[in-house]
Amino acid sequence: MEKITNRLKEYDSVRNISGPLMLVEGVKGAGYGELVEITTAEGEKRLGRILEIHRQNALVQVFEGTTGLSTSGTKVRFTGKSIDFGVSPRIMGRVFTGMGKVRDGGPAIIPDKYLDINGSPINPTRRDYPSEFIQTGISAIDVLNSLVRGQKLPIFSGAGMPHNLLATQIVKQAKIPSQNKDVKFAVVFAAMGITFEEAEFFQKEFREAGAIERCVIFINLADEPAIERISTPRVALTTAEYLAFELGMHVLIILTDMTNYAEALREVSAARNEIPGRRGYPSYLYTDLSTIYERAGRIKGREGSVTQIAILTMPEDDKTHPIPDLTGYITEGQIIFSRQMHLKGIYPPIDILTSLSRLRDKGIGFDKKTGTELTRDDHPAVASQLFASYAKGKEAEELSVVLGEASLTDMDIAHLRFSRKLEEKFITQSSKEERSIKENLDIGWDLLKTLPRTEVKRIPPEIMDKYWKAKK
Image 1 (spheres, rainbow, N blue to C red):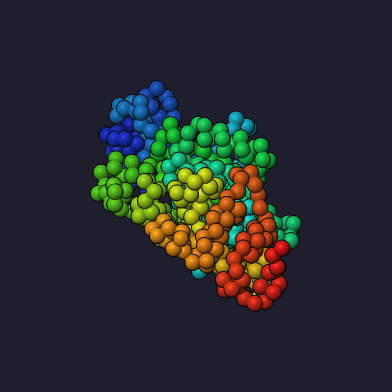
Image 2 (image 1 turned 90 degrees about the vertical axis):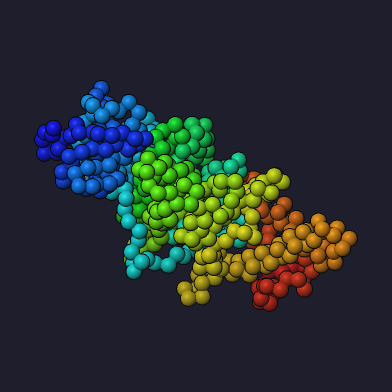
């Protein structure tokens, strides 16, 4: 029934196979999360992990899928260790599978150490507050929904919208504006459940822009086992934590698409016959997502940081769907794509009124405590005024639809024109166009000058005197 092989027990007592799961009986000394090696009757090797232990029965999740496996002839060996990923500085510029195997055809990497991919959220008592601005080169994000080092800021998109294009643009353009040339910045990019064409698109864009040298890329394709998608973000986060907290780098990690991840989680839950929660997703979806999102941040006394952008497509553009709904509870804001703006040809189609970065003010403007300029001293005031004036313009637009533009006052018309110009000249930008924060703020001032000065009420007099110039 069992035999000792290199001090590890090997079993041939597989009793049931269902979906990606396999039940092994008579197991002794195994533990939850343990890595499992599976050998088929034909000698093929596969990997899995223990999802559940009950008495002497082990429920194993097979990463490569159970296709071709049978209850007879299949041998299972429990390794006594958890799933790990070999890390070293040489992983920079490389492409891996969702399980951390080399995908780019390059030489194998000799790791300096192996790290458990499950990791753990940062201890709250050791967390340092997110600070310092990260420049993406995208106006609607940098000025109005600023990304701060150590923050987790998701992007809520929808089917058919250009979130992949925005992701590549952020990878190519993201940086930390700093006078210190020794600041080290890296990007970890993890894609789950994407097509072969999308994978080629990402790699081609990164290589052509020369950005791949500062990236570590993990790709899980749509035709690969869905079960692998559950491990992909964890391998990527383990890499980000290594680069940040052991090598002292500031790391931006981009996860796309978290909807595919949640679908894989639902598939495993259904195979386990668990009682479903909202819309068939497991009842522990919130807890599971938090184990991913809460691994971003800064640690006191450590130089590096992990900043996270998780991209998810909202089914039917529904913000109340469990995936975006629960994500919004865990993260510090969200950037929301607008289907209406996308249909109008605006790129990126970011709805700035429903988007929010809760930590924006912690990383912008002038820091009086340290006496350093994080972005520019007028940034908070300009952002506030652009929001307010744009909101008034959209209200005037709604009113004009109902009553016609003839019913609008002169101020309503001024704000309506302002909102249209802001969409045309500020939000809209080419996918290959990178704007510095100073360029973005100057564009904001040019737009505000189209309004009567009496309508610019959210900017302090000293800032107005410094930056407002008479129109020609």
